[in-house]
Length: 134
Image 1: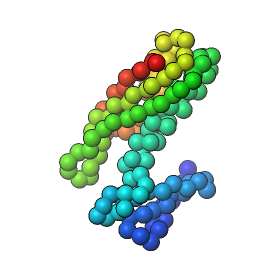
Image 2: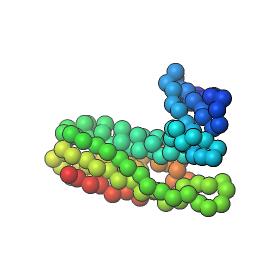
Image 3: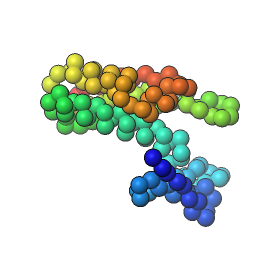
Image 4: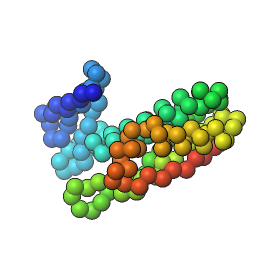
C-alpha cells in the first residue's frame, strides 16, 4: 500500500493520491482556507468507510436486505500536542434488514475482527458504538 501528498502551492492545500485516486485536504484558517477535509477528518471518514463496508458485506452474506446504511462518528481531540482523538462513538443507521440480530452480529464482527482502522485507532482511543434500526 502506498500513498503520497503534494502541496498545491497555496497555504495548506494538499492533494493526496493512492492508486491514481486523488483526495483534497486543507486546514482551517488562518493557515488554510478550509476548502477540503483536514487529515484527521479524512481518518474519521476512513474509519466510517472501513466499518460500513464490513457491515454491508456481512449483511449481504447473511441475505439481509439493506436499503440505507450510514455510519457516523463523533470524537474530541486532546488539548495537548500531539492532538489525538479521545473516545470515538460510532453510530450505525441502517434500514431494511429483517433480522436485528444479524445486524448486531455484523457490527460486532466489524468492530472486533475485520475493521483494521478500528484496530489501529483503539491503540490510543476507546471506540464505542450504537445501532439505530429504522
